[in-house]
Image 1 (spheres, helix red, strand yellow):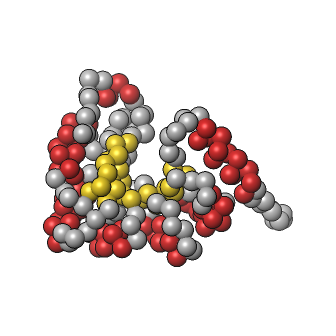
Image 2 (tube, helix red, strand yellow):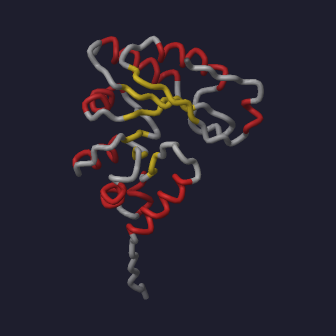
Image 3 (tube, rainbow, N blue to C red):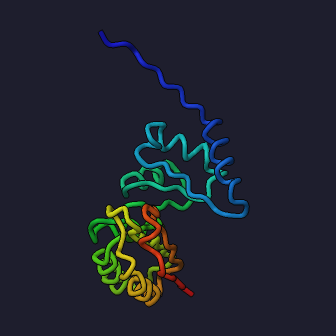
Length: 179
C-alpha cells in the first residue's frame, strides 16, 4: 500500500544556506547550482528566491537554462555540461549563457561558430580540466593549447578554469597562467 508523501521546500532555508556557503570566501562570487530541477526543489522557484543573492546559476543542460530565461531569470546561467552540438551555439549566444567547455571537439565547434558570427560578443567560457575524475574535462596537457585558442577568439570575454579536483596529484607541476 502506497503512502502519500509531502515534501515541503523551505526557500528561506535555501537562501540561508547559500549565504552561509558564500560567507566562507568573503569577496568571492558563487554560482548556485540548480541543475536537475534544483535537485527536485523546483529550479524556477529556487532561482526566483535566490535572484537577489546568487551571482549566477549553474544548470546541466541548455533546456534547463532556457526554462529559467523563460521564467524571467536574468542572472548569468552557466551550462555545466556545455554544449553537445553546434546547433546549440546560437541559443547560447542569443540568451547570453555561460558555457563550460570540456573537450577539444567543443572548442572546434565554438571556433567555427564564432568565425561565422564575428559580431558576437560577451562569451564567458569555463574550461574544465580533468584532474582525475575522467568523466568530463580536457587533459591537463591540452589546457595551454585550449587557452591559447580561446584567447584568440575576440568574442570571448572571460575564461574561467575549473575542475572537480578529484585527484590533485594529477596536476602536480602543472602551472596555469592565463593573462
